[in-house]
Image 1 (tube, rainbow, N blue to C red):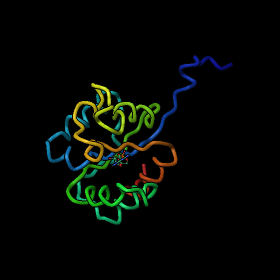
Image 2: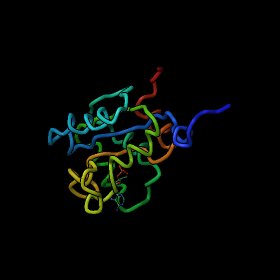
Image 3: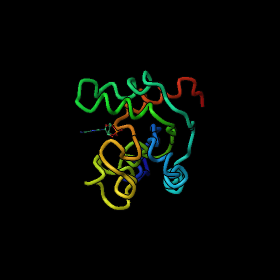
Image 4: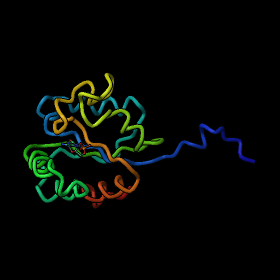
Length: 148
Ligand code: CMP
C-alpha cells in the first residue's frame, strides 16, 4: 500500500546549480542570496567563490552560443568573481527558478531575487539551472570532483 499523498508523490529530492553573478558579489549580496535558499530549507552541498575563466563561462552558456548576447554574457561572467554552488532539496530545480524570478528583472516579481535586486537582463543577479539535464551538466562543469 502506498500511503503517500499526491503532494508527497510529486516531491522529488533534487540538486541544482546556482551562480551569484558578479554584481551580487560586488554589491555584498552573497549572504542575502544564500540565506534565502538556506531559509527555504535547502542544503548547500558545494560552494566556491572565484573569477571563472572565459572557457568555463562559454561551457556554462553553450546553449546560447550564436545569440547576440552570448559574447557580452561570457565576457561579463568571466570579468569578476562569482559564487557557484550546488544546493539540494525537494524539487530544488523548479523551486530555485521560482525564487530567482523571471530572467528580465523588469518582469520579475517582487520577492524574487531578480525582482528585488536585478539590474538588467545581463546583470540579473543569479543563474539557476532550468532542467534536470542542465543541472547535471552545469554541476559537472563547475564541480567535476563532487563526490557526496
Ligand atoms: P541566465 O539565467 O544566467 O541564463 C542566460 C543568461 O543570458 C540570462 O540569465 C541573462 O543574464 C543573459 N541574457 C542577456 N541578454 C539576454 C536576452 N536578451 N535574453 C535572455 N537572456 C539574456
